[in-house]
Image (cartoon, rainbow, N blue to C red; front, top):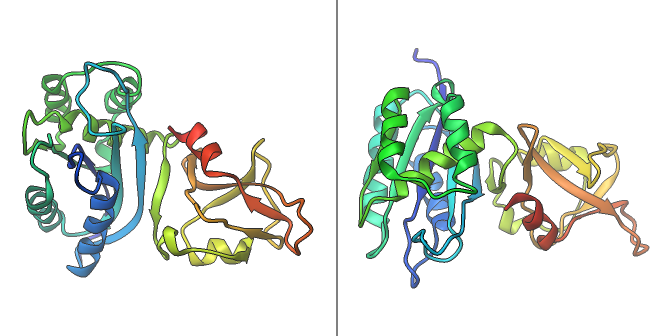
Amino acid sequence: MRSRMIYFVALDDTDNKDSRGTGFKSRELGKLIHEKNLGSVESISRHQLFVHEKIAYTSQNSSACLIVKSDKYEELRDLCENYLIDVAEIGSDAGLCIAREDQINEIILDWGNRAKKEILFKEDAYKIAHEAGIFLRGYTGEKIGVIGSLAAIGLRKGGNDGRNIWLKGHELRDLKGVYQIKELKRIINIQAVVTKDGAHVNENERVEVGEWLRPAIKNNLNTAIVEQNKNGEDYEWKCVSKDYIKSISD
């Protein structure tokens, strides 16, 4: 029996101004991987890249990374390629990167960090990927999506960037209401619940997840950030606002 490996699968620049974004397409790809029985999707994260007038992007210049446990690399790669070729919009510069976890080296981590503050070039991305032995390919337009897809791999592996837009166990957009913290961890792949100053919260206490639960990635953990509930309801915590999560994860 082949052992399951952890793969990082990243997409970038798949959309145009009239289409659904890369985040939506990454969630659809996750569903397809599950339907085709090609692996277990553990999480999907969004990573903000450098916004500059000399960088072509659609709206926000973000990329997405899926973490997938699979023992079917070739089939997984082919599915991702065919999917991206099919859904990449006219006018996009789509890129796909797939790396086994142990292939993501310090050079790739550095590339991800640089992509948040520098103008980078696709030729350098290809060189880094080739030397690391990982899959990197562009499909449409100028193919500059290879820059952001390689960056997403590095940023997600670095463990302190971005926010989750999907977690194994439940569609985040549909999760509403109040949960005991240990129950929330059980039903969805949240690994830590902390306050704004990083203190861990008692797992027997209750939290209201709000309308926009997007656990940040902190210290390599999918982390829900909460603040005390002061409105008199019978729960101790509530998840922080959308604006706060954006401020710490962009």
